Image (tube, rainbow, N blue to C red; front, side, top):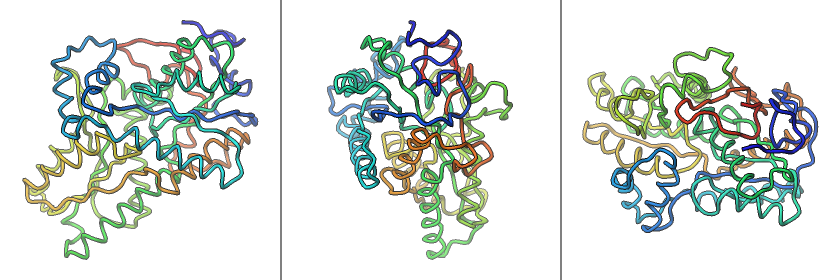
Length: 391
């Protein structure tokens, strides 16, 4: 696929003039017409479950009988993922925040894997006369599935609509260490630890587990800027570990903590990031731990991976091993999170200097324009993507 908008090969496809030359941070103001809120999408009834999972796994040749093994998570909740309603609520909260600041940017919502699709969102934007858009993906960290795949799906939507020559699309930076994203986790951990102390638990009897979605180890190594060595888990793991450190420092607690992973899929012969949250919980009683705080650090809302993998499976594992478990909230529509997302848009609207952008870890502020080869998926190969220097 080729997106033609006057951008020379090797630079940034479909970008605004301020971003098309590929700077790490865009410090030139851009007059955007609208925000495109890009979600993952989810089924909204039992009949939607398998078609939705086919969308998620398209191109991988996974038979329906294997998809049904995952489908029972959704069927347990009536075939309805909460994620679409959460995005409706986030859209409404963003619109209210924008209105309260007198910012006249419409918000158009589109999903990668279920209706309303990104192609529908781009067509709506075009039909309403909008030509320069800023993408806001509901994912905070750097990896193929949490960043590049959104950028590729934007490019696919441009091809599907035939609007590649007419629309320019930038994307806000990954916001893992933005104060708006981190604040809800700080509040959640602080509240959970206070509750456990009030119930008589000593610090050395409590463990904080920061949980995020596991990804293939090869994908993790290729996450982030390919010219930087982030360690064995790539930028993906490094970002989570850095945010965990910030949260515990802000809470002011000396309780032990660690990063754990969940929601692994794929063949057992393929290495994925570990340790698994349930395996870690099983080993805690032998370490004298009696209570666990489970923090969904990798997630922006209480979607299926939180409701099933943490609230159901991990909580049951804790109970089976005699542990008290508290799961802290995700950002959802927390006022600090919503305000922070608007601030991220305004960085690009105003061309905010990099030095003035908030970031709570040494890895931020993250790139506005992803670096060449960022978050490569070696199994699928490179596909065209917006908001990054090709490939």
